[in-house]
Amino acid sequence: MRPGEAMISDDGIEGSLVYALSAAIRERIKVEGRATLLIDLAPGRSPERVLAEVAHPRGARSLASHLQSRVGLAGVRMALLRECLPEAVLADPARLAAAIKALPLTLVAPRPLDEAISSAGGVRFEALDADLMIRAVPGVFCSGEMLDWEAPTGGYLLTACLATGRRAGEGVLAWLARR
Image (cartoon, rainbow, N blue to C red; front, side, top):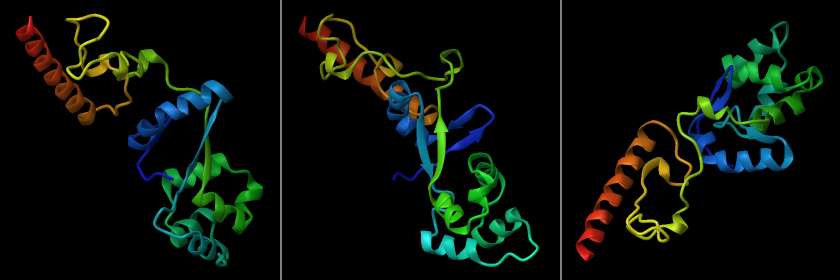
């Protein structure tokens, strides 16, 4: 279980939590053809509380109205329930409550490389010395997205690119001073 955020769009799912798990997700898809994430749609509520709220009689209210007032589910979270669960589960309070706490979301492929803001792969850290120089190619230094790492896009990626660029630059100066 890992806390984090994700954004759902027409094209799939992304966000800090997905970035943190992207290598494992990609590997699972490669091996098994799919990866299933379990999403807690009510992270601030215990399974027992969710079950009690879902099982509470709803009278003439719709399921969406009932879940919004009792569990706080609306919008995308409600849409995910409808998209991912069969009617039989939506009609069964115990199974529905369990799904709210661990909704299976199956992923089948990463977005195409030509749509990527950043990508995985690159020079492995084991191939570099402490100054980010490639051991097998003295005088060649790597930084930023040249490195094999999983990094979220945006501010984190920019900060990491700048920091490794500075480290590689310092490494270049040290290497030149030794020559």
